[in-house]
Length: 364
Ligand code: PMP
Image (cartoon, rainbow, N blue to C red; front, side, top):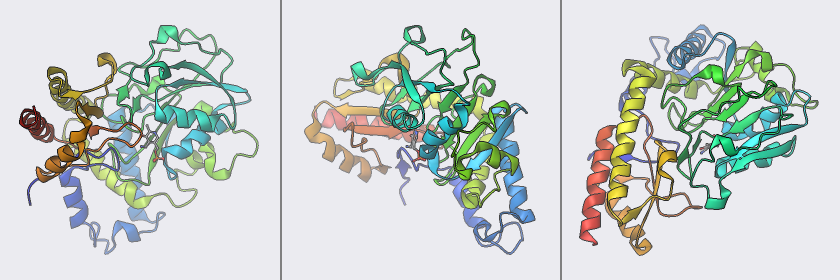
């Protein structure tokens, strides 16, 4: 089979070694006679898998001891409600930065529980840039500030972490890191809560990882469902109910792969190289166009259009024949989107760039 390079935005490509190991361990995990899918989540085998996933995550991301790590179901979308329920802590309002489709969803959900102050938005330019922090209008009475470090659909990424140190009150920073989690080093101590669906950089769908500073626990709004209470999950090591066991196991294999490959700093270098290669091409031709401001371009999701949209279908067809799949852009944006998460090798981006050059010269 010709090598396939999968540019899906998520669920996304996983490291081949991880899939091979999962295949080898599918019927009998480490001599237990069971597939991981068949194990009790409270048995010693799965407990050892879960403990290793957390330990490796803590090591790779440098998670301080005063942060809890939760392994939850419900996707990042559930966190759009869970975050306000846990973090309002008696306050009435919360600050949100609106940089695109995922921010908008988070804001829409938060409005059910809080008066949302949109501290900044890039809607004026169709979400193609990150508003600089000195233009933000933060409500000092807001319980927290929520932002989306990487907008998966628009391809806009913060290459900096908002600085709330000038705020006189405790205002935790809350990040929906779904599509950039573990793609570069993270200074966890800057955040109150980080949440991320696993299905882009670290594993399969079904698992959402939440990292929460422990002083923020235990202050949910009245009526919060048990399953939405971070403290319940923290106190039971994410075993209050059945966690997504197989997704956690695969995530564990991905974390081992990350460690073997030099951790987050090494991953960042490769991710920068991949992004530079692709944006380099987009900027040297007018056959393709990327709408995002240069400083705010995503290293993970690269949206681009063809000057002649009538060629879109032909582009996708020929790309597929070359083994380059899932390049179709999100329905709300059109054009193409190449997602180049951790597990996409540099070679895959090289093949894509060569294909794009040839396609452009064939259709000049
Ligand atoms: N936030 C971002 C930034 C995302 O990219 C996604 C999924 N594409 C979500 C939230 C929603 O995640 P889920 O589908 O796991 O609920």
